[in-house]
Length: 368
Length: 226
Ligand SMILES: Nc1ncnc2c1ncn2[C@@H]1O[C@H](COP(=O)(O)OP(=O)(O)OP(=O)(O)O)[C@@H](O)[C@H]1O
Ligand SMILES: [Mg+2]
Image 1 (tube, chains in turn purple, blue):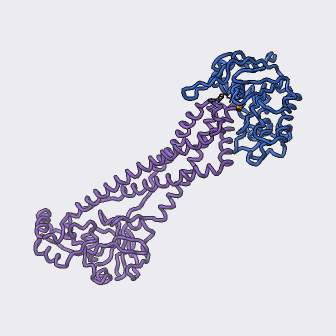
Image 2 (image 1 turned 30 degrees about the vertical axis):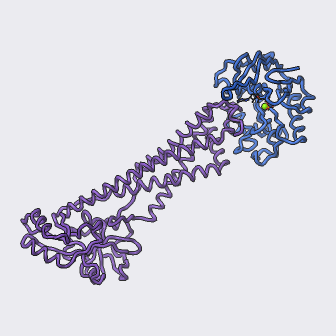
Image 3 (image 1 turned 135 degrees about the horizontal axis):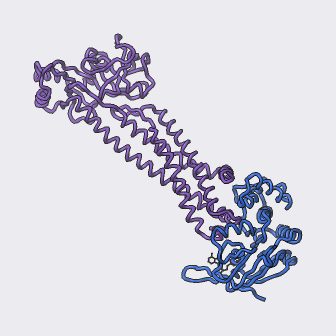
């Protein structure tokens, strides 16, 4: 008890060094938690597609939104597919700026939203006005938009009429009627995706390979479900990267905490010498040093965590290419982070302490 | 029953290794000090004065010879026994770095009591008393950086005697202050010896203290001379 008072007294009196110590821990903790949250956000997004739709994209585009298909592609689909095709519909797919956020816009004929694209209404109602749009859950999580929210797109004010659920790659997107989007963008971008719905009883694989043969390099052909898998594979890679980043963060946390604790102690060898000369045992001095390191690490961890939360709430959603995801700090990240910060500070203190106190007391009192 | 001698040393040797060379700081020191004595040790720089005081205070262990201080055999003590010995039997005043910079005067003095296992509040209260007795009443809440060198040394002396040790060791306690302050510090040590019967071993070249000394010793090249 006396030792704890001692440690606290020492820290507050020596507030400059204490602050420096805390200030050094804070950014490492914050960086670690943010990296971890981003990794977690990537991991969370669900991918599930039922229908065996075939999609046509412009070939070799790293990002489908960057491609452009000519209207003749639709004619070609009917020509090649014939009675195996139930429907072929264009979709405008592009990132747009909406209230200073970049979101993924998908514009398809209104009649295809629930039938072909599997959108399910969660709240609100389907648009019946030209300037109405719907948003998916993924967008609602990442923003504070909801039914009734108004937002400006390309200089026109649109109102959100519904919140919907969308599968797979469409998880986080804003939906608009095709015609409306085409006029909004003045036909400048054409469309990026053609969704082909195979007819009842048609051989999907056969249809896919015929379309592929006929593509002549103008477009690439995929099953929509494969695309979703591809995306989740890409996400897997991003997730690995985030994992590596987290490991680096943990290492930085460990190394930083260790060194800080070690330096804090060796810097003060004279104080240790004085305490020893008065008759304090190594053990009781070690206890004070440990308490001190643990309290500073804990304060640093709390402030670092708050900074991370603040940073994450300032950018409530992170947009990477066509992904929108929500970064949340995982509970186990808190626990692991706190354990590392405090544990490693303690270990650093103990190691520095052992080396320092092994020196004869008289040498601790000498200069230099 | 008090021991006949506070210090009883025979044939003390201590050598330091400096690279390949051995420096023999003490080459066979015999010393007996009775309770209530004020012993002043002088001698050239490098003569071994600090080395001897470190041994007497249990900060260091002799390489050879026998040493008993306040009834404790320091030749064979373990590290833990040396800690306990310093807590209970000796007080130190060094030339520099006597006080912990983050603590105020009362807390620095309280260290001596806390080391003995007393609670923080009672330790601080006793520390205030000691500081008042030594005329440092208005310095109680001051940090070392807010005090003069002389005041810091008087606080250090207060801490050294606070727990009423059997032996007070002072290694050039005035090496860092001006002549007037030196006089005041020496008077304080002399008073502690005269009025409280404190046994003191001090390393100093100052004549003020020397005039009160029961014995003047000169340590040169690791041996007492003259
Ligand atoms: N830790 C050490 N390592 C190596 N040599 C040391 C060490 N401490 C002291 N010495 C050497 O031992 C000898 C005695 O040193 P000591 O400090 O005891 O002398 P001193 O009489 O106190 O001198 P001064 O008046 O300068 O304080 C000197 O030669 C010194 O250089
Ligand atoms: Mg010396």
